Image (cartoon, rainbow, N blue to C red):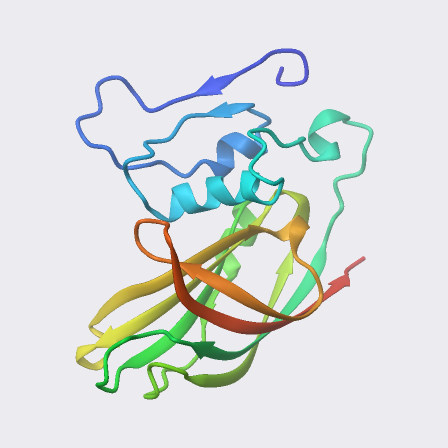
Length: 204
């Protein structure tokens, strides 16, 4: 249906709150317009925004070929290895804080379930070093997103606050060493980043 018709998805009219639903399932069904509450700056909006940011914020992006043509094979299995090296300027406070990095996949159901992991906590909160490699096997890389969150943990892990977030479509990941800028809880760029080393391998 989405190959021939323009379909718009939007929050229910009787909703009383401005929380956002996850737009990925609608996007992966081929829906062209997915309306979210822009006043709610959450990870769902960050994922949706990342789709257009990677196209230079030109207000549109082409669908994956598998959603445009049923004859295009949907086998895009990949193994993604991400070495989380270090963080930079994660806090302006002089006190020591415990920080860690959480990596998660948003996308097709099977990929979301098995790919939620995080690095160990380190006590150097401002410029921590983790040097840990996290690995993901995804089945539909053209439909998945990587969500990176840097968090501060309190009270022996009973409370966690997000320091910064970055989302990117898996299809737009590039291999090699790279510095990833972070955004705050209002999706504004902050002077903080994490350094990653990424490798991508095709799976048969």
